[in-house]
Image: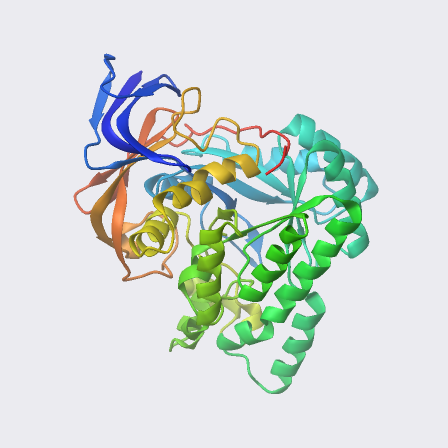
Length: 463
């Protein structure tokens, strides 16, 4: 199969040009003006952007958590991704007790088999860091194609500082990258005890129990471990201005400390937790959404390059029958997580580019190009000859009101209900195959579950 996309505004992380893109099979073969190729399909992209497919490097599909399981499996989650212009997903793969990294990866690959609608990879989550697991890091980086490893500084499966040091040293040797969920466990434990004694157990107090200083302290501590080992870390779902300051401070000192944020931390504030009728439970996630001043600081950090990636932390639980299953009377029992895989591109374009907070090129960088570079997706992230034909033809003027009934995520709500979007995918290609297109009043999936494949990623080579 061949594809010719004509007369679009081709956008990279460094510029834009009007031209054509020719695809043969699964790869981009040529870019230029007035390309004279015969193709099986021709798309007129006049007045539209031609963007590299979005990469979401932070999802939790089918993840068991807090007595339930994330609602999206690999089929529904990747169909939703395709409809939002996300053509590659890097999902978190939390190790079970006694499990090797290899077995952990193979287990989730089996879950995904025959289901994934777009390409995917995996980040092993190290929750049982036995000595043989630290030794297996080399194989995970160089053989399994999974060079990034998540650790938690919070929850019962958190790692201690000594383990963090060992992982940082080992990943440094082979080109691995340690990802850190940075919150101070003991600060949160202390706050939970106080709030419980005071009978403050509504959803709003989830945010109170996890103050900004818990994130800031954990980031500062993780940075010291990087300084000690001369290694590198990546802070996941950074939520606060004070946390961002610690990242920026470390980078100013020449340390390899990177960070992502998510749309919820750019767009939603803690007043959402006060919604009536248990509505605040929709926004219970960790770290929590913050005060409005934090949103502004994160936008500045995104614009100035202090944040390298925007992801979603997609981890959906139904509001009815999920969030309220155990947590009606205690915020600590509300499953942590929210949906977002399908709304990432539309939100960042509308709230970022259209409102002048970031440039179009910067949006492409933090959603595709830098993400591919950070996580070793060598064939992804750019509209360039030789790259995979993961392409979004994007209509910057198409309006859309976000409502769950027109989305594809397998969950009964969206945190962005009623928000007016400007700019939507017109047609989405995954390795040259059409997987989604705008029809009537929303984007519809037109691909095939099972089309997506597991992508081995390359070791980290610098950023």
